[in-house]
Image 1: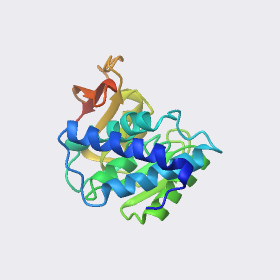
Image 2: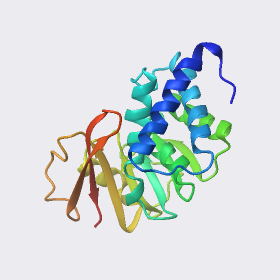
Image 3: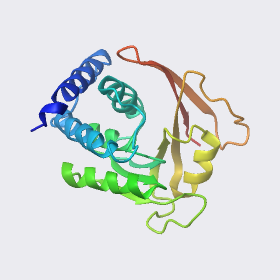
Length: 220
């Protein structure tokens, strides 16, 4: 992959951090994963000069807090699942999960046009199948390209609320579909008595000193 000279140092730091993190978690990346992540990272850097796609600017922070963190839910998503990522933003966690798990069929949904345009550009330049990006504000407008009772799981890093994810994504999940919310170290800090099942929380620590996080999972 050719990288402009002024980006070379940052790309190297990003790649080294990503590789170290994968090793620390004992994760074996599929063929082509690292190259795809490099291209994805380069596109983030390019678009971030014009649009604020992500708040993290440091290559190490992007590798740990965005890319590696997105892989934490991977073991909890069924093989061959149809996955709905609500509030995907610049593609986290859904796009990274698709790169790491080629068996998944992933739909990325975000309300912001520029972010959806970015996601479509990533899909085009990486030549990804099994991935679509839709502009839609779930719960506020009809999203005609989403079919009811289609998805096996819904996930969100942006929402931070299990109740909100269930309300927004619930109509699109198959019966028995699961919900995953990515949270900080405090876990799920909201009422759960109205949810259609018990919530399981799984704490984890990001590699490279990235701090503590929590997965909150619900399977009705």
